[in-house]
Image (cartoon, rainbow, N blue to C red; front, side, top):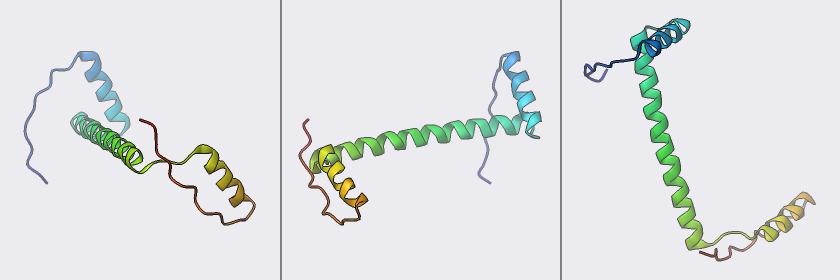
Length: 96
C-alpha cells in the first residue's frame, strides 16, 4: 500500500451527517467512504481530461486527413444493407 498523508477536513455538520449516513448504508466507515469518494472524483477528473484530449486529437486528425461526406456515407451504408461490398467513401477536406 502506498504511504498515506494525514489530512484534516472541516465539514459542515449537514455534510458530515450525510456522509455518515451514506457510509453506513454501504457498510463502510465514514473515513473509507470519504477516501473512496475523493479517489473516484480524482479519477473522473483524469478521465474527463483524457476524453477532452482524445477529442482534440481526433479533431486535429480530421482536419489534417479529411472527413467523410454524409451523402457519400449514406450511399455506402445503403449499398452495404443491400449486401453489396462497395469501396469506402473517399476522405474529403474539412472546411476550417
